[in-house]
Amino acid sequence: MENIYYLLFVCLIFWYFIYLRKVSEAARVHAKKYCEQSQLQFIAIARQSSRLTLNKKHGLVWLSLFDVEFSGDGESSNNAILSLYGLKLGSVDVPPYRVH
Image (tube, rainbow, N blue to C red):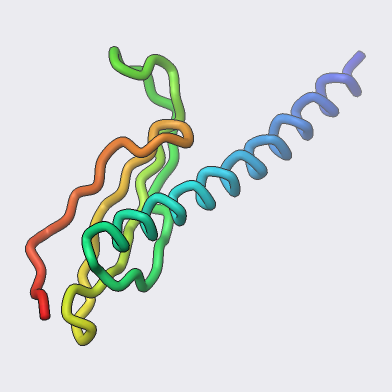
């Protein structure tokens, strides 16, 4: 009986890593689309954190925060924060930046 719990635990960890990979791919797609719409040059994306959260609008969901590096003028780089609720885009917080 104890082996079933170990197997369940291993499967849960395996699912979590696959899900985090899916979230990272969705964040990359959202970041590139945002940069294209805002006429920015997309440079890189990195995960800040992922946690299970409960709020009134989305219910129980994984909140993931990402650092998005972009350039407005092609010479300098800036960082924005992209938040995802599950696989859906929550918000993009962009600081002021230089444009060409």
